[in-house]
Image (cartoon, rainbow, N blue to C red; front, side, top):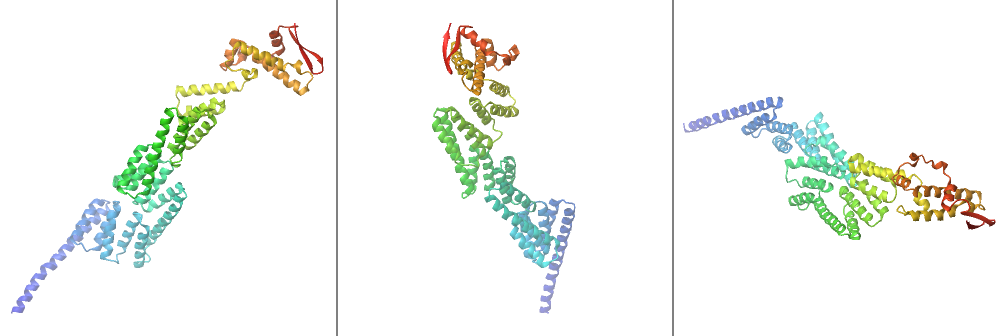
Length: 494
């Protein structure tokens, strides 16, 4: 009787446990089915909630973790999904969908090698599985893009790296490493808004990401916002003290800022030689900082113009606009140097570029002045013909005419070759033209202002230099050349 009683007790205790287990499983299955329904309707948040309830009821059911992993993948929460997928295959290593989802998570996060292992295991369980076959190819493609990008980054072929990262991110959309590399290359290519957008997206999800902080600083650094850039580099180094790129960039930024400021100070103090040296040293710090270097070249060009080294100033400004073809200040500085060296066509070209970009009254006037000087440069330079300065007095103009007219008078060269006679006659006529214009205040004013002299009815083609000569020297008998033998002349005054 005692034994029978013990057995009854045992039987009475077991029945409720079995019933309880079955009830729990049924309830868990109900939660799973509800989760499936929401998943089918693409309401992934509700699906997640019901799969979680199912897991809470039956924490050792592999399919529940697999379903929740699939839902988390759809929500883009790949790290959480990876944990569920890994748990599903720990509970059931033969769970093919679990291995596929684990591989998908690894791949989305940029771990292509781990993804390959997961897809290989899925293929071992089901060698005809089309999804596993395709995903395995995708993972291998990502590894190949990584390899190519690494090589091209060393070659500084940043466009190719961006291309490779874009292709890799199609399969690994949650990989911060790929995004950071792409953003860094975009910054190196001068595509700063795109680079900053990528880095900012990462920082919104992870404000302590040192790589993203570094890229944000890099963009500011290359946009010549050096002080703000240093703040981001310092913050990146707080998050990751061994961040080599941030360390180098921070050091360069501080050195560049200091040298540029020292150069500016020397320039303001009038110490142009020291300013030149400091700007030159600054240019050697970081050849990748295009915008800052463009300003440094322009600054050095300004120094060279102050030192009257105009050709060097032009070359510096040319280097500046090569680095930044939108840099108005460099075009203006170069144009002024072109004006100072009488290279008017080049000056007009630069002023046209400036005026097309910024249509201000000042720029319009600078362009008009250059166009006027260009027009004037294409005429005969009467000052040069007489050998006088543009500010020459009336007496200086007369003296110059007397000297040049006697020098080139045809009678003086009557014994020379026909070719020499023709050339001297041409020069004699030009001397007469020059005197006629520059000795008449009204004509001189019109000539200096670039106006057409023909508007006054003066046809220089019908000009008679002998009449000017006779009028200047007093007419017949006033002055003449007379020969005393071949090639010999003496002056005779009346």
